[in-house]
Length: 413
Picture 1 (spheres, rainbow, N blue to C red):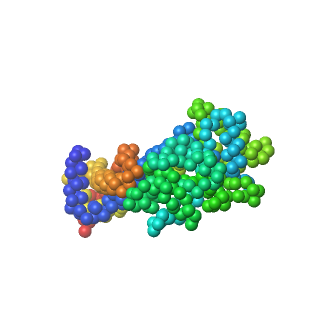
Picture 2: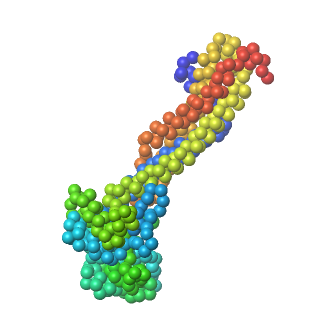
Picture 3: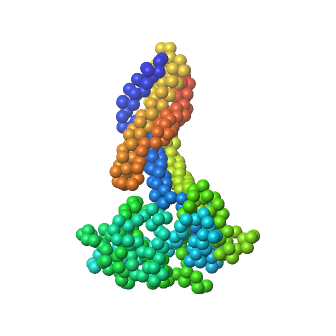
């Protein structure tokens, strides 16, 4: 019997029991749809994360407190961390000749009000080099300068998200007074729109001079009298000198922290590429983990195919006996039932593919920043696995049908 004839018989058998066939395929359908959607969304998240970090600026190096370890949280000595002294040391061109700019950041959340409007947002204390390092500039007014920082001036520059919440009518914010934790601040600038959404909205912030944040808003003085900062951005003058700049920074920070030659770093210097790679690796692992969980549905669907094919063999025992009586061989019976099982798997896979594509479109329409696209490798994997599941789990019922004794099968009631 030809393959086309076997497929025709398989489709006829499926049409005869439509509801049972659909319920049998349900595990395959859910598994394929989930795998395709999760992998495609995961790849979209990886692209989004990479774009967000690339949008921070050019030739950036990041300094974080604590030594990052692959097997746990950052390790940090008691009393260690980043301070204004570290910023000053890194800013010394004699010590770090390959660094062009240095900008620390000290951030906390706070309630900001303007009249009857309020917003809970990030208040970031930084220095005048911040716009050049981050490629993030005011579209109205100005950014604060070194004199504002030296005088702990109560001036603020608003991000677009905070501006829209505090000035919903679109009035110019320059010169207006806002309150941060109850203290008056004059708005001197409005930043350009940087982009992002949800937890990663880069426009949801208010920028103030570093000294103002450390002394007036969120006291940052440590027990040793030094002012702490959360992390430090640095910009390399020449991308080809990045490795040299990292060595210079590590030497300067080790000296600033008083570390001996046999002590590990209590800080971490990462390049922009390393930060992107780390986040992409995390999202990739999470995507794979979720896809594996979704793939369990494919195995459950395969077991469902085996169960229903065993039932089908029992129901069609007399049919099998009749076919053998008129000359059908074991291989013919085997191929008939095996084709039916594979058809079940592939049909479920195709329906799951359509649902997965619909899921990708829906998720993509819900987010302006997350670009989802059909990952063809996931399609090949999911459809191939659904067909393989039908083949593997249909093999035992098909062999059982092929080995039936024709006389016993004809006498079966």
